[in-house]
Length: 300
View 1 (cartoon, rainbow, N blue to C red):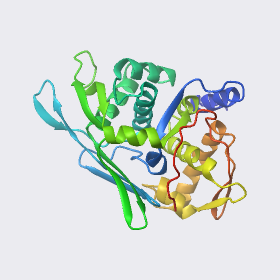
View 2 (spheres, rainbow, N blue to C red):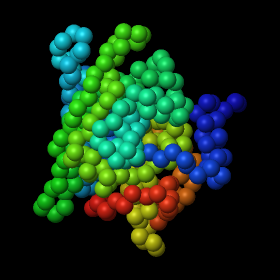
View 3 (tube, helix red, strand yellow):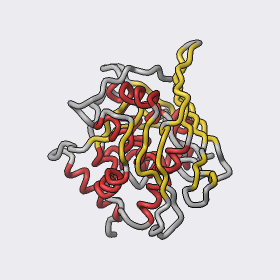
View 4 (cartoon, rainbow, N blue to C red):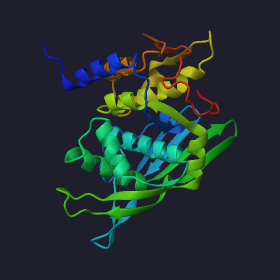
């Protein structure tokens, strides 16, 4: 049986990892490494998304934007799926590399989409632009609790954007070409950014769950104490990654398939899977030598 395009991409990227250190690095906020956005579009009627993992909390509220041609506010959906994660990582990377919360995204996003193997025309780019619009309009609250105290960023990640409705698009799509991240989010990002290998992100870009597992292990494994492995139960794994899966057996099957793909991109990850769950061992981060200092956050 011939390998699928996804299998070929995994094989190719896996073969290149030992010889080609990543020239391109992207970033995710540590809270979004420990919680997650929806895997699929829950529909325009769903306006809130809330997740909690241990002491880390995420609340996303879908937003509205002024349609530049219709001259009225239109509801945008919740950011979701692998494209929302990819766009979020790109915004983070641009802010960190430029050391500025304000930047143009049109040209850099198109180049990024091409670099990670997506089409810069047609459905791929329309979906990417749609997710960028959803992220720009959404209010995303990030919070960490510790004992009887809570630290919360209560703001839109993007506080300003110019919205376009290109006439030459084959489908109705609103998208920003310039964005300004909120100062609160930008300052938090500079302290809590987790660097990720862009090649790995590209290879896993077909799967929201695989991207979430990769980002989680990237921020978690290097903080596991040497000689003190940590067990994450199947229940905890399902609570974190199994939204939408009612049966544990179904979740385990999908999770293990995604984990195998992630392990091809993060071969330094030392883990063990058994009937109890997933045991984590101290491992080097996937991007070494250029790590942003991230204060340890309390976990379960």
